[in-house]
Image (cartoon, rainbow, N blue to C red; front, top):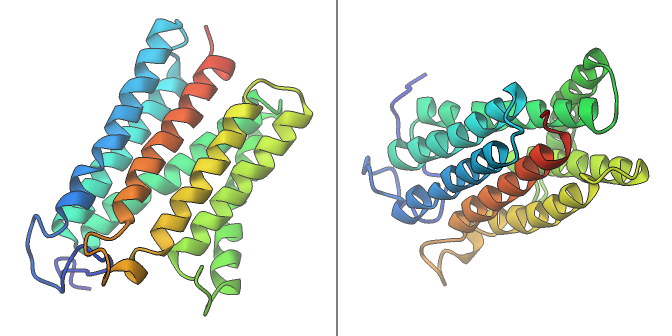
Length: 219
């Protein structure tokens, strides 16, 4: 594999020109993740709920922003890995923590159910081939499904995190929509809509992590 070849997967980048600032709007809007990480960290410190889980979540949100910035500047396979790995780890970490601290599962049970995201994502990817939701979008639909289902379960348990999860599911739905239509709007709107995916996902992660810190973080 050529780890330095240029990948062109977004409306804003025109062709495979190795231009570091070939996606300026997509690159800069990754600041939304750093803002979200800062918001969550401030909340954890202010509420005296900064523990190892809050620290990992805040660091992971920041890593998503850095990884995505690298991908939308260098646009190479190695930068894509820097983008994808923090996203996957965030999904698994957050789901595991919610299942443990909001749903009351054991650490083993929470870890096992969180890891179920991986085969679920693979199944969605297979089933959605040839539809507008194929490819990476299918994996994000799987993540949305888990957030929504967790929100419903936590709501049933009358846990205060439920509202944050349900709000997150709504934000994520809008985010996925704007990710899906990026290429379709190129002719009418050259920057595309992927930058809205960044802004909304930064908001999403801020909401999810701050909600977790307020209602599941340890004093």
